Length: 412
Ligand code: HGY
Ligand code: MN
Ligand code: MN
Image (cartoon, rainbow, N blue to C red; front, side, top):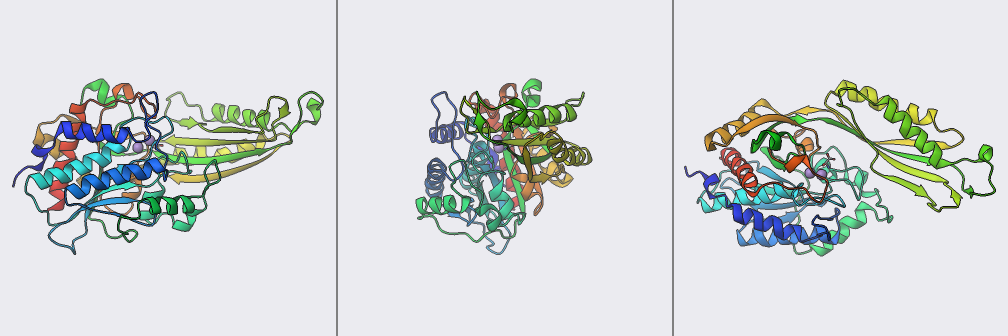
C-alpha cells in the first residue's frame, strides 16, 4: 500500500501554521487566542474551510471540541482520533497545540492524496480549552469527552471578566452555527497527538522526533486570602489584616517546603491578583494560583497534601481558602502505542528517542479511554509559553510524517 507519509508537504504545513498564527497575533510575534474567544472560533472556521476543501466533514460537540472527519469505509468501526488544541496562553507561541491540529489535518490530506480510503474514519480534533488560562483548570474539552468532567462541572467556571464557560460555549456555537453538531464522546479506536516538546532535550541532542513515554503528574490550586482594606497612612500595623503580606508568607513557605535539590518538583505561582490593587489601600484580598508537578505520583500526592496546611499556617489575621482544581497522576502510554511511533520513525529513517512529557496535554484524558500515544518535535532552546517559541519547518514535517505513518497503520 502507498505510504501516505510521502505526501506530507512541509510548505503547506508551514503555510497553514502561519495562517493560524495570524489569528490572535500579538504585536511581538506570538499569539493570544483564549479558549472560546472570537479568535478561537475564527481558527476553527479556518480549519473547517480547509477541511471542506478536502471533503472532510466538520462538526462540534457540546463541550466545544472541534472535529474534521475523513470518512472510513466501515461506518460502524470506531474512529481513530488525532489532534491537540487551538487555544493559546496570553503570550503564547505559534506552535503549542496548533501544530498537533494542523499535523493531523496534513495526515488526513496525505491519506487522501495517497488515494487511501481507510477502513476506520480518522477524526482531526481541536480540544476546547487545553491551556486553562482564561478558564481554569485546563483540558476541559478533553476531560468532558473522556467523561472525567461533566458539562455542569465546567459550565459555571468564570473568567476574569465574570463570563462563564456555559455562556462562552453558547457564544462560540452561534459564531460557528454552520457547523453540524456531534454527539459528546463515543467509542475511539486510538488517539495520537503530535506536539512540540516544550523542553530542550530533542533540540540539544539534534533529534527530530520524540517517542513520548508518558506525562508527569500535575495538581493545580486556587488560593484566596481575605483580609481587610484599610488606609495606608492611618491603619496601625498591629491592627491590619493585610492579605498581601499573608499571601507572600504563604508563597515563601511553599517555596521552601517544595524545594528539592534534584529540581524535579515544579512549583509555579503564575497568577497573583491583588484587590483593590491601589497604592494607598492595605490589600483586602489576594487570589493566587498554584501549579505543582512531579513525575512520581506518590511524591506529588505527598507534596500536594502539604499545600493547604501550609497556607493555613501562614494566614496570620487573614482567612485563607484553598481549592484544589485538578489532581492528575503521572501516566505512562501503552508499550504497543509507543512501539508504533518508534517503528514509524524507523520505517521512515527518522531519528527518534524516548522521553517523558513535562508539559500537560489533552492526551492525558484520551489515555483514560483509549490506547494513546504522542509524537514530539523539538522546541528551539526549549522555549515555550513564550512568543519566541520556534520549531524548524523540517522538524515539523518529520514529526508529521511519523504521525501520518502511525495513523495509516491505525485506520487500517
Ligand atoms: O500546562 C501545561 O502543561 C500545558 O502546556 N497547558
Ligand atoms: Mn499544548
Ligand atoms: Mn501550553
